[in-house]
Amino acid sequence: MTSAVRKPMKVALLGCGAVTQAVYVPLLSRRRDLFEVTAVCDLSRTLADVAGDRLGAPGRYTELESMLAGGGFEAVLVLASGSHGSSVRQALEAGYAVLCEKPLALTRAEVEALPPGRLMVGYMKQYDPAVRRAEELLAELGGPSVIRSVEVTVLHPSGESQLAFANLAQAHDVDPSVLASLRSQESELVSRALGESAPEQVRALYGVALGSICHDLSLLRRFTGSPAEISAVEAWGPGPGSIEISGALPVSGRFSIRWHYLEDYPAYRETVAIHHDRGSLELVFPSPYLMNAPTVLTVVADGESRTEWRDVSEAFEVQLAAFHAYVNDGKPPLTDADGGLADIVTAQLVAARYAVQHDLPIGGEAA
Image: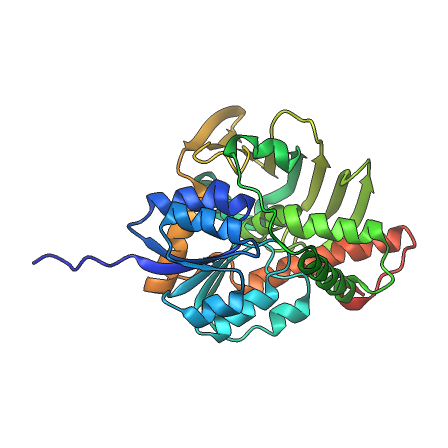
């Protein structure tokens, strides 16, 4: 007697920009065994049509409300830029399961206002096979209590250079007043997080913490739990510049994160090293947009160094499969609303520490 073949889960996409085009469209195209995209939504009808054509999605929308009302799907993938709090809330209220790209929101209040529902926050590095192997090895060593330090270095070239290979479609059909209104709403949310008087350098730091460094915060949550405290924060250099964050881990040891925006650096590179009394576990991540490029895990133990893991499984694809298992089989995600909220809290602690160190005003939730 053969088991019944499960039909693909019908999903809708909100946001058809760079990450959707470069990552999610190719993956959803090749995982038609798991997903059928029936609707797409973007402020730009041009981008909605590009994604819809590539995925064979009949529903094309420029407003989330219209897409949710139109239905014909079981879950929504929230892939748009900016804060996702309002979009996630609307999708959950309409009864849909949600996979939300990081960050979940810009404020604690947005997360606290979410209704009950099936929500998974997308931190694809948590699903990287090399990361999962490092978790297993750390558990065998004794877990967070054996950690002496976690040291992170990120070398971040421009997004344009990282995505030059992808031949992305561009949007030129969105009303500028709509974009201005959205920017105003985002600014108001940041003011709620940091206070009306928070200066631009504090706001910019918060933006980097929630937009990029949150990936490293998500890895700290998996390895050790969220930081127990933020001891020191510095920022320097032109543009997004460089950021250094250090503090105590919740069980044992300390952490440091050094994030550098280097516009003309030849390739994205991220190194996460976990040092313990008997050796080290070192992860080296390639650009997240180069699908199936392996993250390399190197184990240093007993005076020797060896490559332990180099798996070409795509982390974004593993994450999508995990979302399918969550919705259909009830397997809990690695990050839910509580995990997303924890990273927002840590990002606010980072902004507050920087403001205090430099005698800058800070208010809102971060105060």
